[in-house]
Length: 118
Image (cartoon, rainbow, N blue to C red; front, side, top):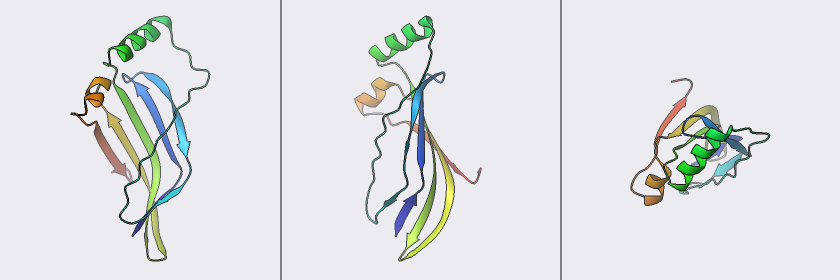
């Protein structure tokens, strides 16, 4: 069994308010018995942050207290033998963990998955 992914878009925000940017990766196939890791470099174009928000964000990143949230949108299908079955939209939202907690490796982000608007 293989898993097929359509174009995948990730958007990052800091502290639920500051857009950090977004990135897109093209469609790909995940082979059977395989774990796939995606790495993104996000880009924000012509982003403007006022000086108060910029200073607070800089301080929170430096102290590792910033909370980064990720929103991922894609479509997923399954391949069995040579047959590809369905491509369902999937939304994944992860966050609510500080940079320090992630770097310590003791806490994983809370993620919600939804498909077909369930």
